[in-house]
Amino acid sequence: MTLADLTLAQWRSFDLPAARRVAQEAAALAQGRVVGVDTVEHLGAPLHRVRIEREPAGPGPAGPEPQLFALIPGGTLTLGFDPERWQPTAAQTADYAASLDQGFGHGPDLRSHLAQFLSPRRTVTLPAVLMAVEDEDLTEPPADMPDVLAARGLRMPTSDEWEHACGAGADTLFRWGADCPLDRIPYDDAAGPQHRPNAFGLRIAYDTYRAEVTSDATGVHGGDGGESVCGGYGNLLGWLPLATANRNPGMAEFVYGPEGEGLCEDFSTRPVLPL
Image (cartoon, rainbow, N blue to C red):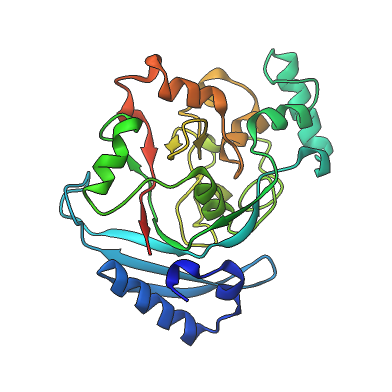
């Protein structure tokens, strides 16, 4: 078995010494070094987190600074969100109703709104990869970023890879759980759950002013460029751009359309290093 075949189920079965051995193997393949292996509680069981530091293989936005990557095991996985199987809280329902009263929202209820913005439930098979702990601003339009990253030995993630890396096997609305603070929006919550590293150690879905692009031009992830904040959509709708399965097709149409030309520095991507 190669490291690219490492599945999330196998990874969760390893003890800490075995996880450290795999981390060293991944670092050798990446021509980097292991700078951290720890274990967190995730979905009721331990999950190891690996961080590998890699010197840049070509010109990058941070110059000669090394870049941190996390190990993301793959396998056959279930992604997406099924609003019909989800039960919103009374507070979430009321908050969405208030947004509707202000002329925001898509559909008569929260489930219909989510169905338009979140990816559907599906089964996918993904390779294990190393993924950048931090997203980085685009330096060229999205269509040109694959060549920019390839010069550094990297590539853009697929939408499925991004979603899996964000949720780490969780099927809740957000990577941290089913709920979010409804007395404030993420921009006003400096100590909120979005600022904690996720289960794989990534800083991901942390700021609605961010908007991460992938190799899939039909979705934008991890934020909406501040649209929900500036539009005053309401508290719950202000948090939804951080939902794991959020694809925001309207924002994707803007990013990849003529209106988004020349604004590439306002968007970001999360480089992937294949194993």
